[in-house]
Amino acid sequence: MIEPRTSGRHGDSPVATRAAFRFDRHLGIANAHVARAIGMALAAIACLGASVSLSAARHRVLIPADQPVALTEPMRVDVLNEAGDRGLRIPDGVGRGWCREAGGSAAYTCHVPADGSYTLWAYCLWGGVCTNAVYARIDRAPAVILGNDPYYAAWHWVRGTSWPLTRGTHTIILSNHSDGIAIQRLLLLSDPADRPDDGPASYTLFYDGFDGCDGGNIEAWTLTDDRWQVVRAPGQVDPAQRVLAGEASPDGPPIVATVGQADWENYSLNLQVRSTASGRIAIGLNYSNWDNCVLVEWCSRSPESSSARLQIVRRTAGQSVLLTEREGSLAPNRWQEVDVTVDRNQLRVRLDAATVARVPFAGVLEGPIALVLAEGASAGFDNLHLQRTASSGLSPDRNVTRKTGADCAASRCNR
Ligand SMILES: [Ca+2]
Image 1 (cartoon, helix red, strand yellow):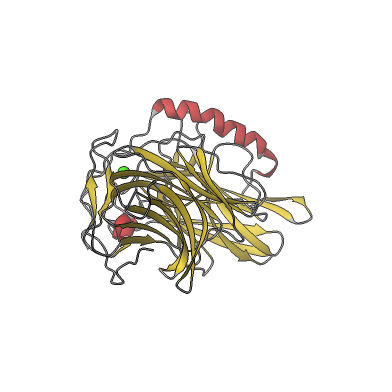
Image 2 (cartoon, rainbow, N blue to C red; image 1 turned 90 degrees about the vertical axis):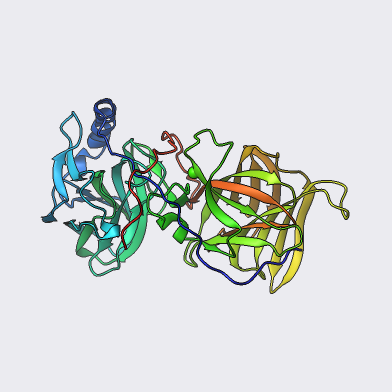
C-alpha cells in the first residue's frame, strides 16, 4: 500500500490565452431547427414564467431568457440566430465577471406551482473553454456556477443546481461569470429525472481540461507538491493542449492531486491518462482522506509481483480491503480513457470503453476524487469530467460535439 505526503498546496497556475468568441452563421442556421423543435414542444407553456403540471408531482416552469424584469450592462437581450430567436447575451470582450472586470445581471420572475426541489436547466451557447458559464441564484440563495461544461459552439441544455422552493413567485438572477455567452431559455423541473424534451443535454458537475484561461482551473486542486505541474504534453493530438502531469520519485512518498467538494454526489468519472513511467497509478474515489477512500490502482511488475495488475481497494479508517485484483496495465506513452461508474450496486471501471473491473458497491460516487502516483510512476491526466448520474436510468447525452477548445488568448485575471 502506498502512503502519501500529508502536506498540501495549490499548484502553479498555467498561463493561458483566451479564445475569441465568434457567432457562427452556419451554427445559427443549424441550431434554428433545434430551437424551433424545442419551441414547438414547449409551445403550450411558452410564456413568461408559465408552468405545466405533467403529473401530480411533476412540474415544469419555463422562463424565456429574452424577457428579464431587470437587466444591467453588459448583459443584453439580443437576436441569437438567423431564425430570429432572442435571448440573453454577454458580448465577447466586455469583461469577465469572475475576474471582476465587469458586472451585469438579468433578473427573471417565475411562478412555482407547488412546493418542491426544482432543478435549473438553461439552453446555452458557449464560445469556448473560457466562455462557458454564468452565475445563477434564486431569491436570497448564494450564487452558483451554471455551466463550465466542455461543449462549445453548439446550443445545448445545461443541468444546473437544485433549490428547495415553495409554491409562489420567485426571482432568478443570472450574472456575469464569463463574457461571450448566450442563453435562450431557463427551465425549472421538479422531477430530478426529468429533462428538457429536445436538444442535447449536458450533466457536467465538474470539468477540467487544464487549459484554463485564468489559472482558476488548477486552483480548484490541492497538490501535495511541485511534482505536479500543468504542462504542454507531448503526445496530445493538439500540441497546444495542457495536461496535469505528475512524477513520483521511486523512493519517495506518493504524490496526490485532489479536487472536489463534500457535497458532490451521484456522479460518474471520465478522464484521460497517459502513463509515461511505470509504478503505481491510482484514482482515489469518495476521497475523504487517504485513510478513507476507494482506490482504483494500476500497478506495474515489481519484485513482489510478476504481472502488471489492476486492483480496487477500499480503505476505511486506514485499513485496506482488496475488492478485486486482476492482470491489467495502462499502455505506456499513449492516451487512454478511463470511465468509473456506479450502477445497480456495482462499481465498473472501463479502459478505452472496455470493462476491466466490476465489483459490488453500495452507495454512489461522492465527494472529492484524487489522482495518485507512486513508486516512480509518472503520468499525464486530461479532460477530467464528472457528470451527474440521473437517478432513474438516464445517462448523459454525449451527442454534443466535444471540442478541445481553442487556446485562451488573454492572461489570467489581474487580481
Ligand atoms: Ca487539456
